[in-house]
Length: 293
Image (cartoon, rainbow, N blue to C red; front, side):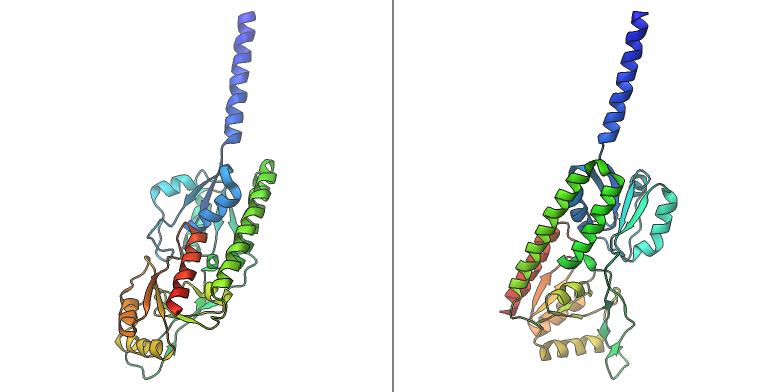
């Protein structure tokens, strides 16, 4: 009888121990792009285990999930969406693959701007303003990231209220980081309102809007300008005194570099999907400021 009781106690302790380990495991969450990993980690800390769908060097415009990512997704409790193009096709499929996973639209509460491409067709005698689409690059403005951060924090608190205090403390620290970053970038561009830069793909519209700058797209949706349009862009770059052209690893930089070589302006590598988000925005701001001197 004593032996039987000991066995029962051992089994019960083992069961409770297993439950405790399971309860202490980080929340498995999915994000669409690397900057979101930065945001979610800042708020969730040790209590989140993050899978990123768009891997380094890939583009949210052409993304398709890997088998391993689908396996991770089936174990996830949260998916933090942000409004990038592939989500239009894949979110419903992700939801079907894991009906228990809650999808959080972190872009909720953000007023988006239009993303326009300005280039001429080869057979045209005037510049055409091509069909405008909504700009999804809302993570490139600290002010807009504050809105996303609040949405992330509220979702984490809702699904894991036991760590509410930690999430709120982390969130407040992240807001201070965002405020400091915004002030530093504003200082960098003080007195430089209206400064223009060309950009291979128009990813930096919210950044430009936040700091009184203007981006001039070379292409839109991955399309290179034709010869006549490229010539017009070179003329415009000279007339507008453009000092820098932004390029990014997700898109061809051929046309942008051709313009930079012809005009004599600086080529800046500005990856909008960099994981080191805060450091990356500050670096891009400093390099553009240096090009304006």
